[in-house]
Every structure is written in structure tokens, then in C-alpha cells.
Image 1 (cartoon, helix red, strand yellow):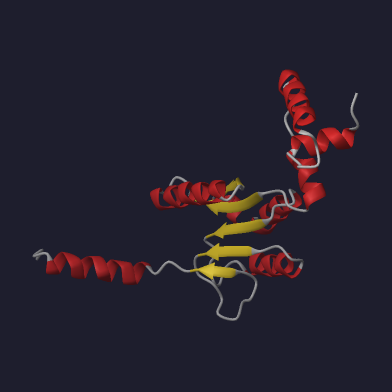
Image 2 (cartoon, one colour; image 1 turned 45 degrees about the horizontal axis):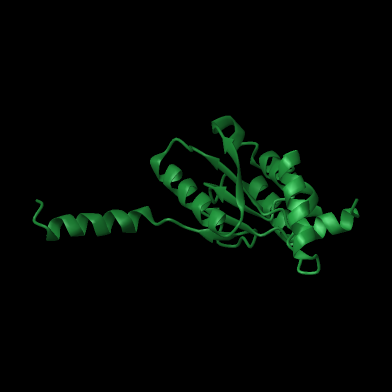
Length: 173
């Protein structure tokens, strides 16, 4: 037999484990159908490699593209995306959704479409999460005085102006 520590080191490809021993451990793990426990690894490493996202209107093609690219970018960096899809009634309960995502010990949060005026409780909760060290990013409007999260604002007015100007330059009337 082997110690649990040797097995753990071998599965993490630690150079302190002899190549022959590591091969034996990996072979046994594969034969047993062993899969590492990501939750346990998160406790030890203090990182779950999971980013939480709370969004509504995921049927919207713009949101679908955003989620696709977010999953792709996170995957390339070794992270998973945990999505809390919100319908209109759940949007009012955004703080509850944020608490639930945070309870999974996510390494960060992406939050979609909070308005500057109507989501004071959600903004307040985001501020609490940030003060406790959880990185957060919101896309949408934001109160100018808020430091609750970093914000990515999509300027649809400017985009529409650029498109209209381009169409005029291309000869559209």
C-alpha cells in the first residue's frame, strides 16, 4: 500500500514522487474511475476555479454571445462558469441569488443588468461581498457613487450612432 499523501502527490504530478510510483497510482485511479473532488481541492487551495454569474434574459442573443465568450475565456484560464439564470420575478430577488452563488465559494461574480436606480438592495449586497474580498463585475448601468463592483457599461447609443454613420457613408439613404 501507499500513504494517502503519496497518492495525493502522485495525482497532482508532484516531482517528489518517483515516476514509477506515480504511474502505478494513476493507473489504479483510472481503473477505479477516480475523479478528483473539486470542492475538496478548493478548500485546500482556497480557490474553487468557479466564477458565478447572475443574469436575466439569457434568451437574448447579445447575452448568449456574452455567456459563450465568458465560458470560453474562463475555460481557457482553467475556470468554470456557474450560472444563476434569473427571470423577471427573480430579478427582484437579486441579493438572494448573489448570496446563493457566493455560498458556492465562487472566486468571483459577474452580474448582468442591474439598473442605477432600481436595484439599491442588490448594489448594497454587492458592496458587502466586495468588502469581504469577492471580486465582482457588473455590466449595465451603475450609480455614479457606487464602489460596490467594477462595471462594464455598454453604450448602445454610441453603437447605434456609429452604425448609422457607417450606413450613410456606405450610401444608404
